[in-house]
Length: 346
Ligand SMILES: [Fe+2]
Ligand SMILES: [Fe+2]
Image (cartoon, rainbow, N blue to C red; front, top):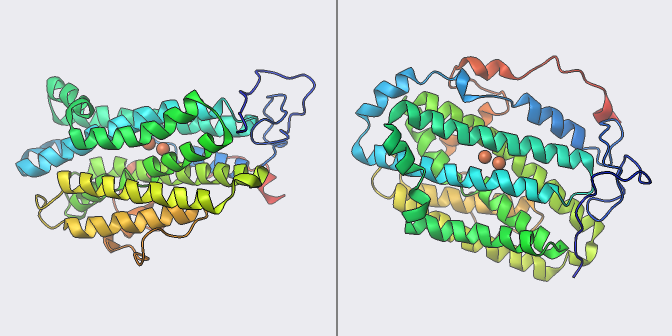
């Protein structure tokens, strides 16, 4: 069991460019032109390019439309926002905890930006709810996680993985916690996303969906960042790259998919006109396969190689600037004039 030590605040004897991802030597001074991982600076630029805030989005039309949603739609809407608020809150803190153990000032910097984006995600849920419902109702929704049994099961599942690492920071536990992270950021949001994109596709609650779309876009970068850290850990500690680990990760994904499907049946089920829960289930299997494969392992579910909710693809592609579905002002917010110091061309 290799224990991981916290990064020192400063080390005069160590180089600025870190010597390893964990348990390495690093002065802790950040010079973006002298960092260990060539992908860190391009990732930094992308994360900054994603910058957005809820203030830019006008909720006016959503306020009117919310009244016309069916009771089931309203309920699902609230439950999903309640869930997302919980996940993003935990995520803010987890990012900081992982960051403490990375002996690389640039990866620590990326984690801080990631955590800041999670704070904005939480802001958006408060912003959405304060526009649509009373303060009492908003407070009630932010407390859903305390009382919803299906939610509790899913939260316990992720928290267990995070807690093991927080309490016992070993290589194995850090690797496992990253798997749970990829599930949180790359799978557990996805039935929620499908619901909001379903509304948007019917021209309903477009401002809310715009924020969900921005969140989705951020999460894709977050998943990729954690995948890179996971793979780097395995490169530096190849003795942990075993068939047993592969099997364990696949099993974690099987469990995660089952929990996400249970949740999808709870919030979507047969209640949402035009959104078939079986398609959402296939979508969950598909994403479980994608994420497990991103981490470098065989897909745990036979088949499920294609996204069954094709129309969501269009929304996800907005992330890449390929299309402009929502025509919100902030769509063009990506800064094109950020100075390129050429580092990523090296
Ligand atoms: Fe988030
Ligand atoms: Fe995230």
